Amino acid sequence: MIRIVLGFGVVRAAHLPGWRGLERPVSKTLLLLMFYELFQSDLAITGCPIGAISGLAGTLKRHDPQLAERFVPGLCDETGKHLTAAMFLSEKAGGSDVGANETIAVATGDGTWRLFGEKWFASCPHSDLALVSARPEGAGPGSRGLGFFLVPRTTPDGERNAIRIHRLKDKFASRSMATGEVGLDGAFAWPVGDISQGMKQALDFVNMNRAGVVAACAGAMRRGVFEALEYSRHRIAFGRPLIEQPLMCDMLAELVVDSVAGLSSLVYLGEILDRAETGDTTAASLARVLTGLFKMDSCERARRHASDAAEVRGANGLVEDWPDARMIRDVHYHSIGEGPANVMALSTLGAIAGGHAAAFFADVTTRAENAYGSIPLAPLAAFILDESHRVAADIAALAGIDPDAAQLGARRLTRRMAEIAIGARLLEEARAQADENGSGRLTWIAARYIARVGGGEVIRAVADDPGWLPHAEALLEGRHVPLHVGEQAATLVADALRQVRRTQPAD
Image 1 (cartoon, rainbow, N blue to C red):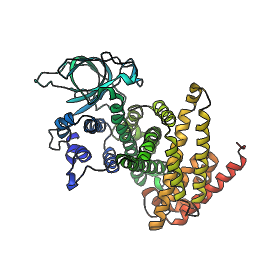
Image 2: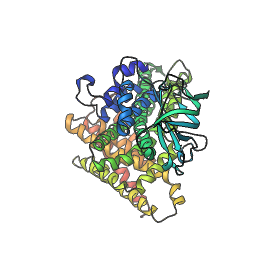
Image 3: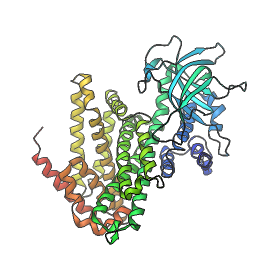
Image 4: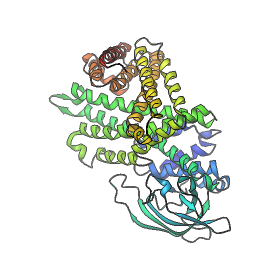
């Protein structure tokens, strides 16, 4: 399967010119959409290995031209002779606190190094090349003292490197991809670029992998929708297909809204990353915020989504003959990998402290204002702007409280920021679709998504309205929906939001 993916050129397209006749490597948006398509078929076998191969190629290109010239062509090979790659970061001592890592790097005097230490959660430990964190002898404490090194499985003289796989993990998820506990007993290594910039290199690698996780979760949710819709069309219960039954339509609608929101946030992130690549500092600042927000949001929704999609299939959703049980396990792996929710929340606090929130709120404002030209969407856009002002005020208040107290609400703050960003994006897309072809499908989806931000009473206003049921199949399957259906949903949500605001106490 990895040969098939690489043969299609997923890694080659990202890092070398010439793929499908293109003069330059593909955009981040197109790359993430390629991952999105791929991950609808498989999360476990190819996801992490391909992400690691692509991540290592990008890291070498950015930070060490000599190593890049030597290894990137092999990492991008399409003929089946590719190099495989991994990243060894986690240790017993640190986990997410990589600054506590204990692996030591010893210089040999000839420009190479030897690594000594233990890596506790090393996926793809059999890889040809591994990007490994280690603290050079004499370097300072914490994450700033870490460097990054390229460790080959085989040394330049043809000998097996001093890497020992102590055992493979018996994992709950992604069982078809090996993850091991690895010992480095004087392993041969090359330094990657400036070893004093190790954490910058790590964040480059990890942040692109986090974007890949957003693609994986979006792909998983799309696959879950496909499975649920396909089953509901053909399963007859109580005298008619499930998809014709209102309660099932309501459940399927929730799955579709999450899937569309996942894809929208993926493209949103890809476009920002592309702008950042051109040197746009505002986009780079925004990417610093959005990557963590969308990683956390997509993982949390994908876990719930996979369980609900399995429930549509009933008891067979628990049987390994179908993909549902595997999908439930695999989305949990992505939730923990590349930083769990707490780490993403702390990353959000770090981005705020670094002055990046201004770019976030400016972008939300621009997208919400783009929806103002549509009469039914304007009240929803006004609600998103109001929510963004409330979040901005909460962020401003953090500056005056104890840092430990500020951490308490970090996950809730991160979720709220993700919700308003995705809501603004969906409104922007809804107006574009209505203007382009007169369909109200995305307007309906945006209204139903934003209703969640308003709470239970607002959700009921749009979800319990029977007016959308005659158009349920078109809404669920992505066909043209009369504009008035979306406009009615937007009006119901806007009215319910105004009622909720009137009953809330003043700030």
